Amino acid sequence: MIDLKPYNTFGVSVKTPHLITVESKKALIEALRLHPNALILGKGSNILFTKDLQQPVIVIANQGITTENWENNLVKVTAAAGESWDDLVQYALSLDLCGLENLSLIPSSVGAAPIQNIGAYGVEQNQFFESCLALDCSNLTWVQFSKEECQFGYRNSFFKNEGKGRFIIWEVSYVLPSKAAELNITYAPLKNYFEEHPEIQPTPKKIAELVIAIRKSKLPDPSKLGNAGSFFKNPVIEEELALQLRREFSDLPTYPASDGVKVAAGWLIEKAGFKGYFNGDAGVHEKQALVLVNKGGASGKEIANLSVQIQKKVFDQFRIRLEPEVTIL
Ligand SMILES: Cc1cc2nc3c(=O)[nH]c(=O)nc-3n(C[C@H](O)[C@H](O)[C@H](O)COP(=O)(O)OP(=O)(O)OC[C@H]3O[C@@H](n4cnc5c(N)ncnc54)[C@H](O)[C@@H]3O)c2cc1C
Image (cartoon, rainbow, N blue to C red; front, side, top):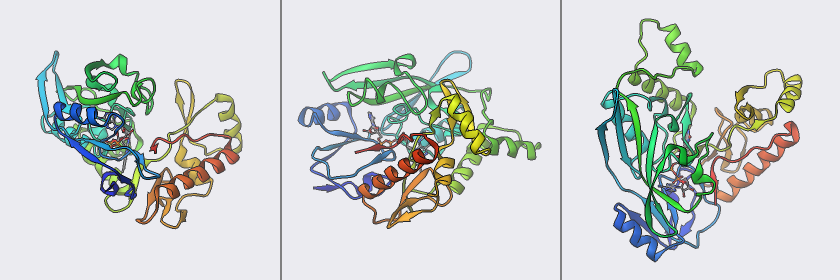
C-alpha cells in the first residue's frame, strides 16, 4: 500500500494499493488498460481524501511547453498537463507574454486548470484558453476540446459536469498577447498599489510580483500548513435573499453575478465564528476563513466533518448553502 500524504496539499495520510506516474501518452493508455477505474491526480491541491482508496492512482506527470506565433501579436503557448501551473505562468512572463500574471503561484497542474477553471485576482484561465487535448477513457481515443466545448463558468466546466471522470486532460493551449494590452488591475489591492505609486507602470511582471506577495501574506504555504486553498465556492444567491440579508448585515460583501448575487464565503464563515477555530489539528486559517487547514495530524474525515459543521452553521445563520470547491473523496 502506498501513502498519498506527499501527493495531496492537505497532507492527509491515506493509502492506495498502487500508484503509477505517467509521462507519455503510451504509458497513460497502458496504465488505463490495466487500471480502468484509476483515480487521476495532478498536484493534489484541490482534493481531500477521507479514506483509503480501493483503486490505484495515476499521477499525470508529462512535461513540456511549446510556443507558436498566432495572429496579431498573439502567441499560442501549449503546455503538458503535468507541468506546474506556476512554471507556465513564469515561462509566459519570461517571454513578455501577458494574461496569466494574476494567476501566479496557484499550486495547480496545467491539466487540472481547465477542470475548475482556476481564477484569482480578477482573472480566470478561460479568458486566454484556446483548446485542450484529452483522452476519452471510455474508448481510449484522443479528443481536442475547443473553448466553447469546455463550457467554462465560475470554478466550473464541462469536465466537472457531463465530462466528469471520462476525460483526462493531456495538454492545454493558451493564446497570450505579446503586448501588455490586457492587464487587469481591478482587484482592489492591485488598483490601490498603482494609485499610490503613480511612478510605477503596471507591467505583467510587476503584477505577478504583487500577486505573489499578496498570496504569500494571506494564504498558508501548503508545505508548512496543509490546505487546499479556498475550501468553498463563493455562493451565488437570489437578489431577494441578498436584499433581506443586507438589511440584517449592512457589511455583507456582495458582487454582481450573471445568475444572481455573489457573496464572499469567507465573510460568512468568519461571521459564523469559525475564523481561527480548531478542533484538534483540523481548523480554519486565522487570516482567511475560507481556507481549512491541517496542522499536521488531522485526518481527511476530521477536516470533512469540520466543513459540514461550517456549512450547517452558515445555513442556520444566513440561509445560504456553501458548496465545496474541493473534491472530497
Ligand atoms: C494554497 C492554495 C491556493 C490556491 N489558490 C487557488 C486560486 O487562487 N484559484 C483557484 O482556482 N484555485 C486555487 N487553488 C486550488 C487548486 O490549486 C486548483 O483547483 C488546481 O486546479 C488543482 O490542480 P491539481 O493539479 O492540484 O489538481 P488535483 O487536486 O490533483 O485534482 C483535482 C481534480 O481534478 C482531477 N484531475 C487532475 N488532473 C487531471 C487531468 N489532467 N485530467 C483530468 N482530471 C484531472 C482530479 O481527479 C481531481 O478530481 C489553491 C490551492 C492551494 C493549496
